[in-house]
Amino acid sequence: MNSHEHIEDDLPLYAMGNLGQSDRQRVEDHLAECSECRRELLQLRGDLALVGLSAMGPAPQVRARQRLLTAISQEPRATTQPKAARWWTLVPSALAFALLIASFVLWQQNDAMRQNLAVLHTQIDRNRADAERARQILSVMTAPDAVRVTLVAANTRPQPQGKVIYSARSGSLVFLANNFASVPPGKAYELWLLPSNGGSPIPAGTFNPDAGGNASVLMPPLPKDTVAKAFAITVEPESGSTTPTMPILLSGGA
Amino acid sequence: MKRIFLASTQPEHGLPDAVVISRICSGDESAMAVLYDRYSRVVYSVALRVLADTGAAEDVLQDVFVQLWRNPAAFDAARGGLMAWLAVITRHRAIDHLRKQRPHEDFSETIIATDATTVSDAERDQALQKVRTIMARMPDDQRSALEMAFFDGLTHTEIAGKTNQPLGTVKTRIRSGLLTLRKAFAA
Image 1 (cartoon, each protein chain N blue to C red):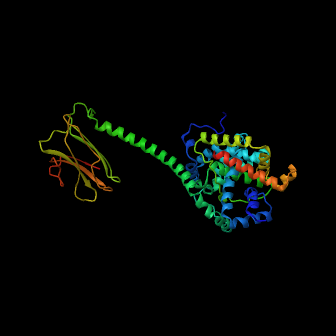
Image 2: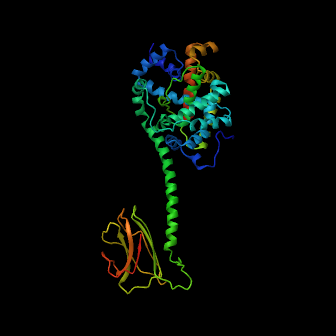
Image 3: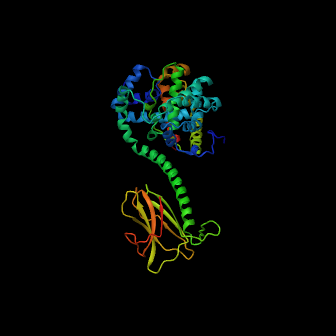
């Protein structure tokens, strides 16, 4: 009686939990030996889900939503750890489905990749928005027609002024200069980072002011995690120096 | 066409199920609200179809979502779609309720293999509409036997007694109905 054909017709009832104990045992005995029926059982469970989805009823009352949200707010926070499984109940299912899982690997991967792709698209959109914002800021700072105006007290002669924005953690630096006099041919201003640990000054980029006395240094190569004590500016050969040449023209503590 | 799910202008309502589940895993109650808005009608419809009692169906609805909150990792996106998984979980819970049994099945033990994996509200609506159309066009004897087994939790003997049909005929009709549904849904 345990022939394949007999069992096939019992599988849907088994999947629904509608068989009596003896019939259930008979099906499970057969499943233990028949990979084709194990595969079919997995498929039948998917078919049964579709039957469930055919149920068409009204939406639950609005109060049910609040009831749920109130209930979960009083529950311990969910965790990512799966609930401890009763291992002895997992043994037969693990054995029964081990081979079936392999058969569905491609299908599973496709679905998982689809979900992951959607997540990645969300992240890409967010990164793209961030990058666009950064690009807009940089484009303003570096635009040839950008006007840089330093406001000082009335009747005060404009003085050379530099502003450094520096992040030690990422080694990122932005420097903006105003009211700088031009330097002789073959020379350039050079910005220096003076480390707080007393180490040698680190070159942080050279610059030549434009006709308006303005200049900028954006994201020069700097080591990460170097805490700055101060910044300073000297005049150096146009190609830059590895150590500052005195005198220091401007400086500021970090 | 009347929309089955609540439409929303909030961006998080467009997030894939796997993302919402991961937020629930980290204890995000608002993610639970998103999932409820997305699937409460499906869950409630299944529970109400089984129990034919709004109060009991609401209890099962509550139970299914609270269980998901307690153990979101029970759902494995790699194994199938959340909507299909919830439909089966809800049916089992409702049948247990009907039989006045303690819930016998751990959520994490339910494995679903189905193509009914959806990402957007529109896809979900489309899948539901397709299933309902297929069921409506199924031969009456197949659909009736299938629904008595699935929604009423009747054994083949009980169905045979109600329909005055041989046991073998009942079993064959149930299986034939499922194969019809599988083939038509995949088409």
